[in-house]
Image (cartoon, rainbow, N blue to C red):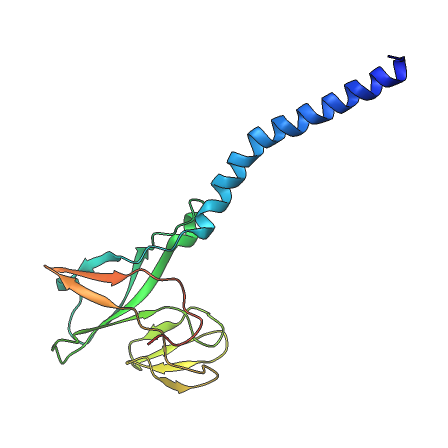
Length: 166
């Protein structure tokens, strides 16, 4: 072998070994980072609070932690909901709303004195039952499915909807 051939041979061996080692290290890392993106999001219920924590006719802001399939979701998995305990305490005793305006997703505020939800960004207004009262929102506030288990209020986990559900 001439020195040039030896140099070419060793260069190719070095590149091949580098690619092999990068593959051994990189494939598991990429798999670990990308696998959650292909997993279905959790579809269970999370506990919100005790039913007794909600007075009749009162709308209350509560915080929950949605179980994200993404290990790195961190603080973005923390969310809030508006829970309204209806005065007509029948089988539909609660309404649970996402805090996001259906116009552009800004968080809405509950104005207890006026009994409306108000989006401070673009002037969206919703009645206490979540229906649109005025402004640019194209549809009512998104409601979450809920259930009562024992003395606890549970809410179904779900990503922020982009279209009206059900």
